[in-house]
Length: 322
Length: 291
Image 1 (tube, one colour):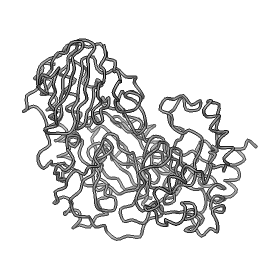
Image 2 (cartoon, rainbow over the protein chains, first blue to last red; image 1 turned 135 degrees about the vertical axis):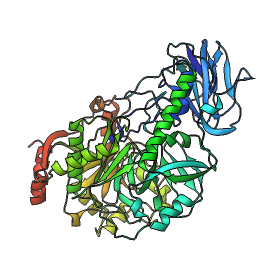
Image 3 (tube, each protein chain N blue to C red; image 1 turned 90 degrees about the vertical axis):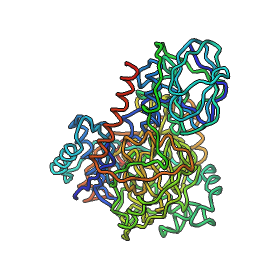
Image 4 (cartoon, chains in turn orange, purple; image 1 turned 90 degrees about the horizontal axis):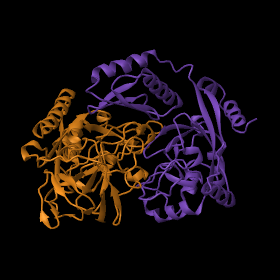
């Protein structure tokens, strides 16, 4: 029971729901960037929702199955083919020994989740199978897949079913990323805060599992100050502190970076607020050059959005009769 | 010191103890995060102390953000850092200053540096008013440093020099960060030194390299089998300058997994330190050297 990697794609990694509890040592949570899609893929193949799957970005891998299994692909629209025949995304399909899974060109979104019944069975490191490539930890030898790799599978059931479009979540166009201002928001001038929220940004090519950089908005101005001891001389510097997941830092005031699942745990740049937990999945589906806006919300709206996302997951379970 | 609390989205509370770095701010952060850990508050999932701040990650489905904030504020009121005493460790880290690997790297990124004609150490000596690189290395390695934060990437320690503020070495970071830094580089930015635990991007000035692994995801290194990351906030570090032969010998010992760092239990009182810095550091050196 295994999957052979024929070609690896651009950067395909083993991911589950992550490795909480080690951020104080600089080891981030990792795990699927779009956890809604990751959970959905596992539901479709009859796995626990947190089983390990493959996350592929922009370009899919070519995989060969050595045993019969159920497979489902969720997330972005990267059209799968089995032995050259098209298969639908967000729908479970069976594979037999020797079958080959390939992908066409990305039509929308950025990342797909490839779940196989039984789950990808790599060693559990600090409670998770997720790959943290910067720390060479977890996944397959702490790295993205290479041609010639073989991935073991766990023992699994069969699953089945499909998830219609109306039950999925997608970023809009432009993507509206809801954020709670705070942290060092007070370092911005009043005008800079307004302008940051008014501008339409574009995802920069430097967008990965650590963080997403944005360009195209105006540079923000800071309230003048005498640099505090230990902070550094740039107005965007702070004494190195912890970074929340989803926090938006603005080095030098020019290009905001939203930290994601493989976040650096801290550093010396001011953060002007934090993207709410419900919208972290959406960032994982943004391609470079796609437009995005930051939309201010309060805590009550952030929690309501969190509950909406949980309800959307509950609808998937209900739909699949899980 | 009044702490400024702010929510980081719906899952984090960020607490700034002080805008500026000081040992007092670090001790307040460390003692409060220890108190939060002991209180075992339902819904708290991550407790991260930093230099002069800390961060709590929590599950808002288990505890309301306002309730957690109230608990933290009550702890702040109850905490007193006046009698701050820390049971900690002191360890010696060998450093090969002016090594060929960081030198090769810094030469590749000269156009991102404030002074492209000087090396990072020459620049650091100049901006600190020290006559030579040797004087700077002596100032860097003669007094101990506190691990005031672990993070950025896996197991990377931020180190704060245990001297009067006017003697603290300060060096600006690179104008634009490098895309490469050798693994185990000893770097410095602002008032903090660090050891890069993995190869990667970095903006700190590069002074040297240690042969001693500080992060091992495979947990094979003899002293990293229980924990992947060597450092904990509150550890005290003393640099020991070594030459090429000593570096090579240490690397050989590491390769054969017989390298053993010098690590001793120690206690530290902030009041004693503030009263007599030189005396406190001298006593720490006695503990380190087993006298």
